[in-house]
Image (cartoon, rainbow, N blue to C red):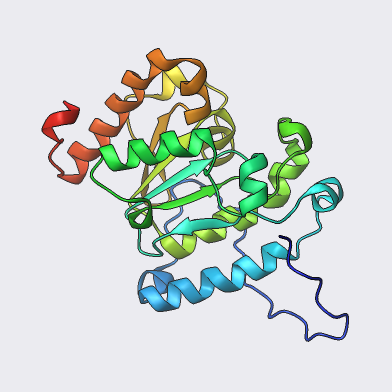
Length: 231
């Protein structure tokens, strides 16, 4: 159920420091944020969540959404799973990846020996595009400071880009996923893994083996033994 609207006399939300567009994907994470405790990181994420909840930069999305879909998981996650945009289930529940594709993502995370609470999950867009249409360039640009700030606060060692829009927004590459897979891409001190979106796997089950190869590449780099049952 959507939250009731706040009174117009309510105190204005505390301004949140937003990142500027990095001049390069090699621009390091802010050193001062790397020293934050888990509680401090969570507090900053909560403050950013409030800002996102009141965002009206995309008039159509602000009008049609049930609620914003910010992100969930550990503020100290080693891995961030970075998707595209919320769907109908996510719009209702306010949490990313909770529908059919979300259940598959959970299975992938668990196959990697983690729980959802161990990683961080977020999308490029914080609002559902009507009819699940593709996000526009303007919508992506409006949401960019939000996901950049989330990643700045968490500073994950690995970012798993799920699908074309996540790849385009983070790496600014129009190359096909097939040509970007199989190696790490640098992004501000993190190692980026490019793979297919779980929704694509629901339509093309044969690609699951490719995603698992991508996860094994990451696990090996992390120094985590691949579970016997998953080999």
